[in-house]
Image: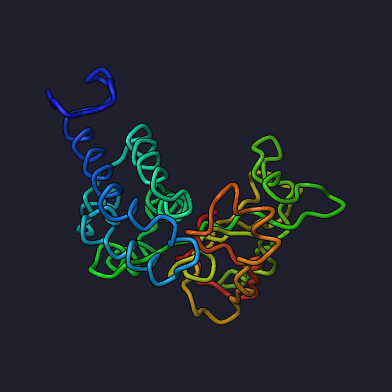
Amino acid sequence: MLNDYHLHFPPVLVSDDEKNLHNAVHRFVEKEIMPVREQIEDDLELQRKIRGLFVDMGLQRLSMPKEYVGEGVRGTLLNALISEALSRGDVGIAVSHMCTGWAWKPAIGGQMKAVLDEFMPKFCGPAAQSACFAITEAGGPHGGGGCGLENSTFKGTKLRTLARFKGNACVLNGSKLWATNSGIADLYCIVCTTDPKLGEDGIVLAYVPKGWPGLSVGPDEHGENYQRECSPMCGKGHSAHGQLWVRAGVPRGKILA
């Protein structure tokens, strides 16, 4: 057993290897984040440096598949422990890191070979990478605005970003709001629908890389409105541009429907 582990879980929940990982992240936060935490929110270069250190310690590729030189280490409780440890230093940095994992889950779970083969090697490589899971929309008369769109009881009926299949491509048309890592993401997972009336049966997930024709991001919203509405919840250590627009054709291999 580890003598310096500060939390107490039965072995059936957290293995010694997972405790070692959690301790490593805890020590990283103490050494690299706590001394500069007051500067993180207003220093984009410092945020990039910290994400680069995630690569050095193996945190970026921790949950990525082994066949792409990832570590293949996954677990809900372990993810929660890592998120808690990072949040001690800066909640925005923690949110940014965890949202990259969320964006990858559909591709990994759905075994989307085209997406994995093209983009996963970069996320397991030597450079810092981020991903964006774009769900939230502005809403309207149909309801579902903001985080309400993510309410599972709606079953996709409030989505208004549309996906239309045409030949070997899927054409996306719509916009997203406050998507974490938007603006800095190397890869976007965009949640769409073929028809809101179809509910879950109409949901489409499209993977789009940064710079893709038809994908555009609004200005950084770390201003007065952001300070008032979002910074208390998520901090400024993550990028959350106000608007993300997509009017683009995406190959079928990059689509999960």
